[in-house]
Length: 567
Image (cartoon, rainbow, N blue to C red; front, side, top):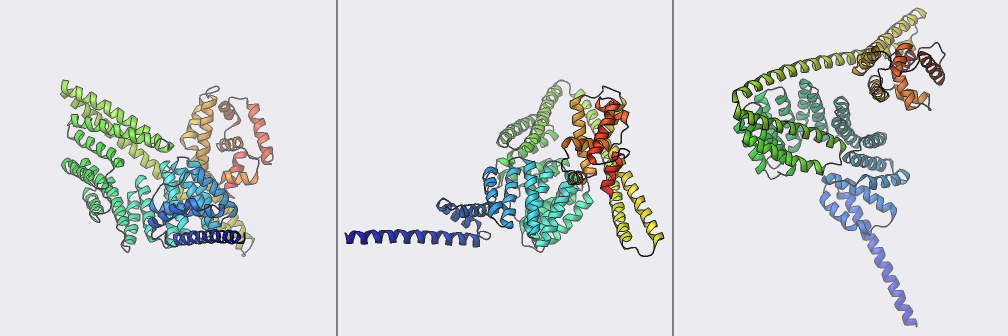
């Protein structure tokens, strides 16, 4: 019996010893991962994969999950989906440090962005950004701003994207991350190129290239040389565009040169060097990095080349090939709502071009002379229309830029006068003069913002609708117009909604839209026509709204809202 007890004790001790050894081994491996993941992410990933199923404690499971996200991100692999990240985020918000919270929320934003849920992505990015700034993790803050810029770029909000990339560059510079600093400047340059501000684009690219010259990083230089080449391609400076695109290709042949060759092919095709363009496409297809993601672009560029050379048979063949590839890619990426909308647009455009090409080929066989004359005539009309449109857009953009600059100057001057007024000692006369100057500046700012809002397309549509008389607006149309007006108001008075929510916590969405309508300063009769109600009902509604805002009945709501944003 005693022998059996001894055997039992020995077995228990062995099991405890093995268990302790196993835990010690796991802890050792976790520490190794934390030490090497930045320098040797592949090795760290393999160790993580081997021990993930052995970790049972909730604390270690969540910590290991965050570590795996970092390693996965470093390697460029696909991050976990938003549902898994959401569960881990809840745990970290209760138990994690502010740094770990910022990191997991940032990864959740990335997951939402990949799934096409852009509003949730922005919400989480901003939350993570606030935490990253609080702990002065400027490197993480830079990445968050960069991904915010990507989201706004996808939404065609180029101005906001540009501002986010600029802020990212500042954070990367503060963090000492020179490589990301240079790439953020490149992103800023790209947005300016989208805004047709090519001089500013080249200015930022020059800054970026001067930074990368000090780094031994061929990939960064290639990306920036490619950007410079594309800017020169936009301004139709063929020699410089070709020079920089060739530099991006020849700098390091071990790096993926396909984007450079595709841009070079497009450049040659646009300037009539069709043989060179096709040779670039041949090099793309023979590149070791060539994959399905590039097949559609190659097919489309070949279609353009053969179309330019009037070989319509081959052009049609490559266009059909492009549509087929495009369909398969579109199916694979259908979960991304923004991307899907763009693809649908491209699909419609390509199908239209395909139909036109078939018609042109038939007409070319039957009546070649008529088709040739028609094409020339259509091209001339299109060119005239394009130039007029471009000129009109350029003038409008210039006017908007001037208004923004003037507003900024006036705002700065107003702040300076307020500071002077706070510290004025000279006497009552100087104080009165300063107050007059401040009031004058406020009136100027108010006038500019009022004109800016009244000159928006949606404001003009509303005025035009009112001019048609009663019963001219349908409820669904009016709803859409008020939503569009609210968006314009948020652009012109970005802090107004936040200010009102702070002052009036019970402020509803319907109240906000009514505020936006009041900023047009419509007469009671005009508002009644727009809303299809009696003038008396408008007066009653305004009276109730003043009561909700705590205003005397004689106060003009429009002036009250404008003053709130200037005082």
